[in-house]
Length: 282
Image 1 (cartoon, rainbow, N blue to C red):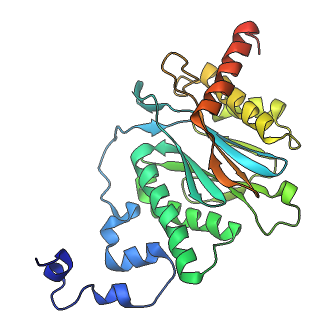
Image 2: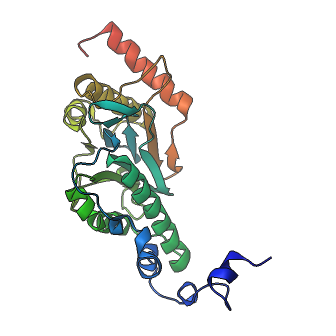
């Protein structure tokens, strides 16, 4: 039976571009061979576009690492589009990205970003540095500028563990971005993006402890998301009846980027809910 490669490229298994050495960037390869597959090269519809949007993501450092946590709600206008969306993505062994903004484009961009990091490591034999990873994401965001101006913005929050840091206890890094690809290192040890971010950051300003262990840091992140959900209708709080809880990714030197087990996240979230019911004022 004739293969699809033989039908599409008679006389050769793959086109020449696939066998030619070049940039170690997978995005550059796509730009040369199939530019229509890049998110920034899609036709942008005219007028207002209604699409599901992800909301609140928080990040904070702790002694020996850094974590991301996100609520699960996606909204479309004044409606709840999805109650259990996962907005956190482990992008390589020591990095992760949380996304707020247009959900479909964000998902496509982060998947391409993870492939970009893996492609580079396979060709070069070493992973990108932490600065290289965060700069690569900024470049991809700039490629979506036309969509962002049309209301299809993606706002990621990058966290990583710097394996080259002098002090492994303080090697967790948080990088935020704007929709134009501007890149900002967050030196305060915590940050949040999305519609509930003002309330989450206000909570973290009081609760964040750079010397906390990972368990305390996870609890502080869930508390911040609870506060955001309390004041922002687009942020979903722990939903005990449906068993929908925040998602959390921790990154440490020993374990790398690890998604917190659903049962463990549920236990922490239920403790937070119980504590708030006993003390509604916080």
